[in-house]
Structure formats: C-alpha cells, structure tokens
Length: 101
Image (cartoon, rainbow, N blue to C red; front, side):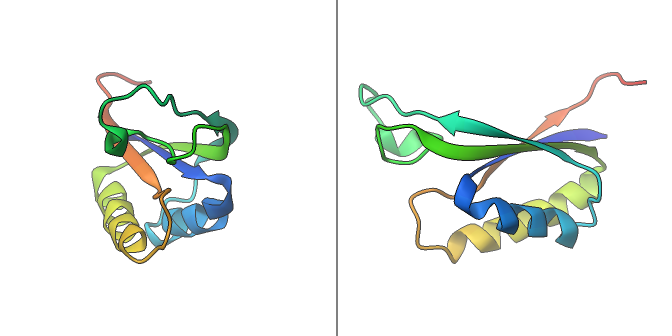
C-alpha cells in the first residue's frame, strides 16, 4: 500500500482524473488549492508550480493504492507531461505507508 499525491493546475483537472481511471484507481480524494511561487529561489526550474509569481489555481489529489496501479498512473503521467505545451506539468509523489488499519 502506497500513498499517491498528485497536483495539477486546475485546467488539468479532467486529465488528472483520466489518469486515475486509466490506472484502475477508482477511489481517490481531491481538493482545490492555490500554488504560489517565490521569486527569490536560485533555481527556478525546481519550483513545483508555474513560472508565474502570482497565485495559481490548482488541485490536489490523493489516494491509497497498490504499487502496480500507481506505476501505471506514473507511466501514463510521464507520457501526458511529454505531450503538453505548458509550464505546468502534472506532478506526483509516492510515499510508503508504514502502518495502517
């Protein structure tokens, strides 16, 4: 069991949901968030959000799932991000779950 956290700009919400469906992940949660960027970073490429210094309407998804489904989603996500013309790729992280009930 792993925890998948995925963020996207709000305009990619439907595409993010499609990624979950393609991976066979049928249960997930989401919430609207605002992304911010500080201009005082040395390496602007590493910023999680867009290149804008203003607030960016974004969405956060999370789910608990098995590693096989998460790997499918990550593969689909990589293909999606390679084919978009945007400074705001969908981002995902996977965390190990030590204990759960």
